[in-house]
Image 1: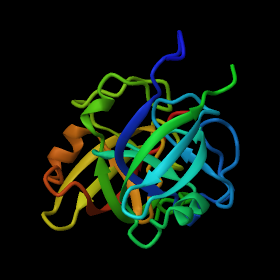
Image 2: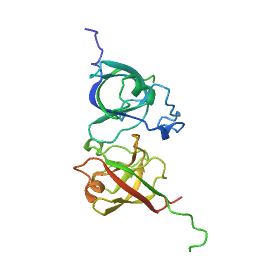
Image 3: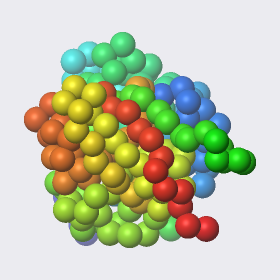
Image 4: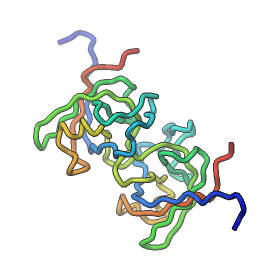
Length: 108
Length: 108
């Protein structure tokens, strides 16, 4: 009922997280990957987009900013920073199903 | 015995391959991903580097050109094009251990 607004971007699929070797490396957006920031790699959303990531197994959520590109593997939709992965408790599993919802578009 | 040559870059770890949705998309090097080309994503080797990828389980090998960046997940070292994945028979497994060896450096 918000006139003119587009439907929100949502997506389901697998999440993984960055290996420790990426600490301090450049992301595709030009920023430096820091494991304690709440960032993520997504293949199509503009850099700066804020996405809410939900782990349906435990209902935990985390908001991350898209700063990088990836993942390539089938069924995978997002790679989370270490901190973001910890917040939704997927570090031990390594990969887990998640739901994504864009909560803030990138600044132009 | 080649005076002045450096030791070859070799690496072991997991390989995966590109999901079909990447067909026709731009890679990090600016080329377009085509599933029938022998290309790969690697996180550090310069674009244009040719890498021999060996599947030790079946001794199959394939030579791929690095055109993209990735993967992020722990233990993963390369994402192969669909054709390259087929050549070393990892399509059904999805992920498999491989050995990498640089066989031609990128042109400057």
